Image 1: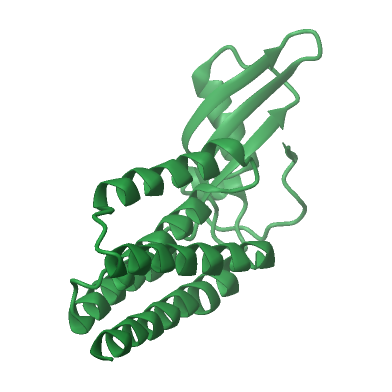
Image 2: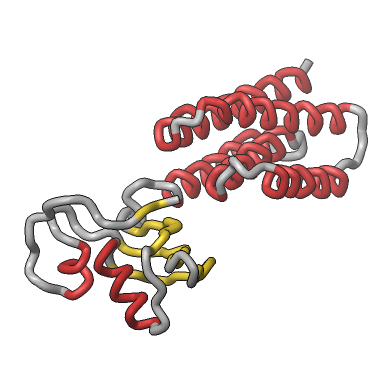
Amino acid sequence: MESVRHLAAHLCLDLVAVCLLTFAVYYPRHRRRDLVPAYLALNVALFTVVAALAATGGNGGLTLGFGLFGVLSIIRLRSDAVQHEEVAYYFTTLVLGLVCGLPQLSLPMAATLGGILLLVVYCADHPRLLARSRRTLVTLDTVHADPAALRADLARRLGEPLDWTVMEVDYVRDLTVVDVRYREPLPGTTPLAADNGQAERPYQGKPAWETV
């Protein structure tokens, strides 16, 4: 009877933790409803496997470790629609199920570890953290032979370029495709003013670039 109460307490802790992660952190920020049942199902499924192995006296630590990273590899390599931050949430739901399902851990220890994990994810994916940093794939209607000219063009169109990679150069159509990471200008300023440190000017019109 004691073991049943212990399992029920760990299950309640796991459900509270994964619901906080899914409904209080992930969904309000990313609004992908299709991943909500995936997170909940993966978490509860891993908790069930861990609890079942513990009840039968099996030593599944190594198996669970390989299985965890195997699932993550499949998610990352086989799904183009899942972004890096969503893979982090997958990993977090799996780890929460693993930590809460281990019967060797006391309930306070499992709650502490789960709380630390939730706090780290909450802070790491907070919208105010590096809020002006952006990444986009840009198609420029010109070819720049000089990297300084390319940087000036990106600064004029987007903001302060932090790093970029030229993905494609088409001399026939006079196009350049650039994967660029940049700092978004402050509201009410043009990208050129934000990059060159000029006085802020009202921004009238849209940047002349195309995101693909």
